[in-house]
Image (cartoon, rainbow, N blue to C red; front, side, top):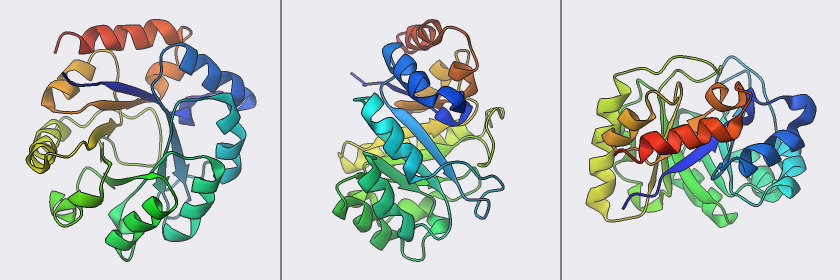
Length: 221
């Protein structure tokens, strides 16, 4: 039976009370906290760094899932590992040597993930599947929250699910962008098991109700 994980993205949280926000969303049933790092270079936005990760670490026991939308990426990885990240994922475009970057993440005690943008081909996964703990498929173009899900991502999810299953390894298949109650079941049916949701959760008054509704949809798969 598939284990489904819901990972609220703090990109949509109220940063004036971030500790309270992450505590509340975990109490509402979140499985991990998704931490979006943007550098205003690789993507056209600037968000948060290791100090914020370190600040929220004492507030939650669930894994902190750091998504690095930065270029170059290697310099910042040790800082996030030290700050309390459990999973660190990056875009292949942000690394000169993808295999080396994956090894760097693991050497610092974190699980390693690779992130593919909507137009990034799957062949970048071909020679590194043995070093991956997570594959994140972007279902929007990275840089901003609140965008709509790109439907073509469903075919890509199904293709990556086949790649993962062929390895026999336990690799999480995460989807980020436009995930909400009314499409989470379709995304899961395509093969995803981990779901990043920002405005769909933090933008609502009752986090528990949203997460419960998402789980109810997932139970139909």
